[in-house]
Length: 268
Length: 353
Image (cartoon, rainbow over all chains, first blue to last red; front, side, top):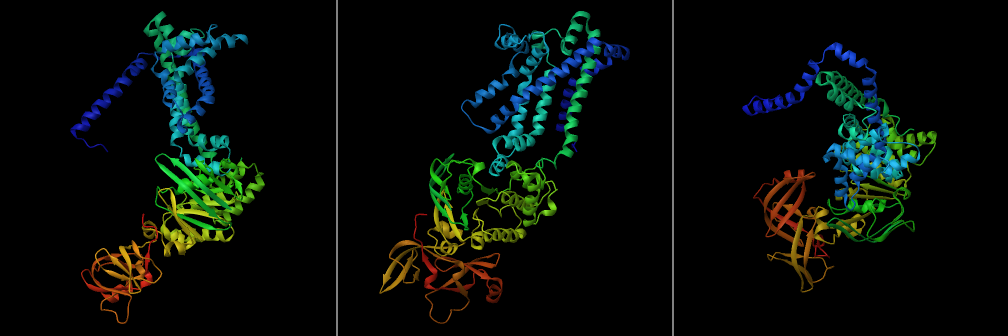
């Protein structure tokens, strides 16, 4: 229990102001959206498609990134190598870049003049204005969240558990998949969710590589710039609700699965 | 069986230097040392978790210095057991067998045998998070033994176990050694060496400073550090001389001890085991090699009775049993006589430490 000293009152007041600062605009958004407007927007196919596109592209971007991000996070947690700090700086770089600048950089890379764009072009894939390009832009700006969270998770796994597994005859890969990853699972999952959420809400980088097909943040912007505040509100409310629902589900599902998972681990 | 040859290893500001060790088949070797002396690092070098900067590790005449950890078949039980928290007890013990791609039936039967040998058959389906220290110790041992290691390394196996369970673990370890397991056990507790070891070594600042049977090491410590390790508290800086055919040791403040004949002249340190010094309230009758009057300065309870500090010109520490303490009616500032035989005064050979 908090004791009510003057200092605690001040803390309470300041904390409430911060919470109010976050909640007030959102509350305003919800309160200014009428039910008929909301349901009409929810039934709009264009809105539905853009939300669905946002969700699956961001999910796919996070999932594909995991293939490289998890091993990189392990390396950053476990190994010391020359220029490690520079590598960490590179990982954090997308966080500090203006997102439109990130979008320009990605566009240069995936357009036909860029290395990746040319490679994709040889198999007939144009990455610009394409879900693959959107995924790349989302991954570019949101990868640091995944890597850093997974890295913290691996750091927290006692190294001697990995050493014990090696001593028991397991190869490096087996140790990684049976000890390191399962024990850092919580943080890897948190990183995945953070990357997914960050990717989902990305506007600046995505709008540069793909105005169409429209992800939800671009659609909201388009409705706002073409029709004004009132018209963009219901789509915003809908997207916020869907995003919240998905995040809650992602948080809850792995926790439930964990209960049944333990006994079978090494028997397989 | 295991031979370490001129092993050197730098680890931050610490270094293991010129480690030479030889352990025979079926031996129980206890390596004693304070924390930070290099004990765990040495075990890691043997297990392959670290590679020495120079020197060689031989196992059964094979050079395993840079052999992969997975291929050495040397079992290491970590100080805090390193039980995998994401698996059940069964999962932990089965882990090395799964890594060896054994069949499911084979794994099941070997896990059951190992678990029953360690008396943890009833715990197999349990999660490891709620196990007691003693149970975890047994799980860790079973998990290592199931691999049938050529050599078993134990890092402070008693350190994280309640005092009441140490006897049980000691029995388990002795039993394993009798079954033929060659074992290296590192500890900071000399009593474990006395109870278990067939050979003991003392490591200090990254060097092995004495090696031999536990009796050798504790009866004839080479220096003050080892002597302290053996629980000896009576150290005297002396000058040894021969007076009319008898060996005498003159302490810094002129107290003179009679020594046995097996000594040599010069300056050095003499140790006297606490239990070799006798206490009495009246001057003992008969001829005693060394007999001094002193005053009790402090009385400290110990596991076996009391530790009595006596100032007889030099400070002595005497261990006596509780009954004897009660019989003598000792208290601080009481006058007492202390006696000890000449053979109890041992000259340290390596005075530098």
